Amino acid sequence: MLRSIADRLQLEGANPFRIRAYRKAAANIDRLKVPAARLDSQGRLREIPGIGRDLEQKIHELIKTGKIADEIEKNQDRPAPETVPFELPGLDPKLARLLHRRFRIETLHDLELLARSHLLRTLPGLGAQLERNIIDGLETRKKA
Image 1: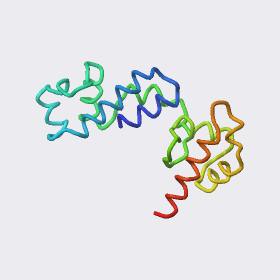
Image 2: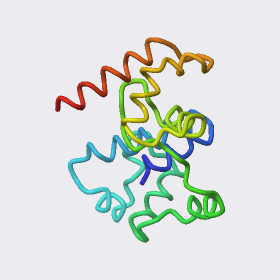
Image 3: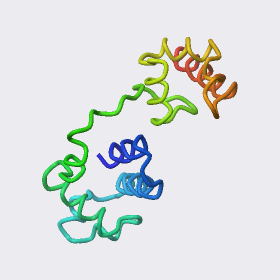
């Protein structure tokens, strides 16, 4: 859930420090040797590196209810952001959304056609290296 919130914040162009805080909290919770729920019941969530008062409250709410109400309320009127449902080198959620909006990329095949057509180079800040990374990533994925 914390990673999902971080992805949505990134797509919305939110403060990078806030995005990083959610990602760091998720990673540190993943590394715990005891369940986060146990730490929560003992009032020790803030002992986890990167978890301050705000994230402590959100994690507590998530453990108790299975959701984070204020995040749901903030986003209930917005459609879910479009993303290409896969990960490749150089393709982050923000770029995936841009490619979906600009070129209607929805499948691996669409993405491969786009990369091979050299149209990515028409977008500011993107170029041949990204095209090569995408093609290489797709070829590796096909072999696997």
